[in-house]
Image 1 (tube, rainbow, N blue to C red):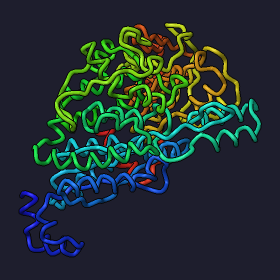
Image 2: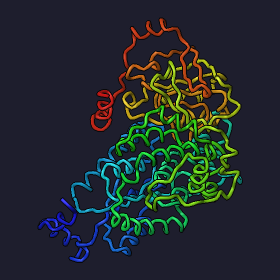
Image 3: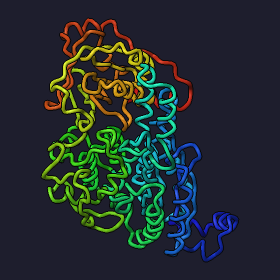
Image 4: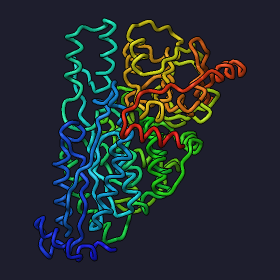
Length: 539
């Protein structure tokens, strides 16, 4: 049934009168404004202002905006305890609840999404693809960096300070000073972590206006973009342009290319394929690796360098990156919320955004590794690995069955160079929930051992992770993957050049271990996590 027909049903019309709409308003196009505002997370606390700006734009263009809320988990607050197990499942909850609200009511002709943090952005993109209505995104915008002793700091420095303080490298006063300085106000954490990576992906997909990803939360430009997005959704409705018309196969190729060029968070390898599936496309790991091989890495933002998102924005942001990639043929024009061509944009600062002729690396910032330890694949942020790291890197395994045990060990400072920390039973089923391992990787970073210690896990990483950090190892330990058979003292070989991750243990030894292996069953409360584990066990 069309929205106009639903609005003329007697109960529906009576209830719309009940919220204060008059006949003229009811008969106009009604636009859903999906707002992830909450008072818990800096990335979300300003979204009411952006929602009002977007609604003003809708009204100016002749529509009627009706707002409803959606959840958004802060991975930073959830980090380091069982709360992180609930973060990734929230992505599906977000997609499902938005679908439920839109389809249950049936009155909406378009959607403006106010999106912010790590799982919120991909969850809303999944909903947009699933619903296939005219849709546009306003992403929250980065937070400004903090300042400590004249240097820029952000959330990554808070995690690193934790490891430094545990080792006695800094005083409690210094630790507290760093912690207080890292998050000076609203917005997504100031580096190219998962939230800002996904905002960049959203713009590269063509689902937000040019410049939206890097326009900062506190900047008036963000409010102007929100207002313009409200106006633009009305044009998309009139033009009949729906989300899947924009999120086509070419758009996903473009998004992955931009992601590789900027060296985004490894979590994009989880999220972009999930969004693509909702739009009817499959992107396996080999296809992602192919895009990485032909796309130069031309941007390095924190944690891969000292540059912050504010530097990236001033240098030209995503429009400049896309213009560079178009020159190389790595990105092509396709339909977007703002038209069928990408606007030309020049690089303003070539130290922040390198020209394609002078890349940091001729290949992308994210790599997929396979081998005897990860026959189904694993992911590493190659742009975050120091050039001083040997290739291949061969080290001795120190194996842990939880993030907490590994973090405690690292903080004691008993690390030897050449160690490969293995953290298993943290995958989607084994955790369950696939927690991010930022505390252990930040502890390693805080000790200055990024180039000397590797970490391999069937869990995942925060976008703030750098160093020889390999996640998403598949199959995961709980489902019987080879990582379940690794033992202290085993040799592990990592080669970025060869895209390999291998456990250097004889097959007969592994078979003997498998005969006595049983999955570690971690206690799981009934409800969301038990359902999430069951879904992965079913495959």
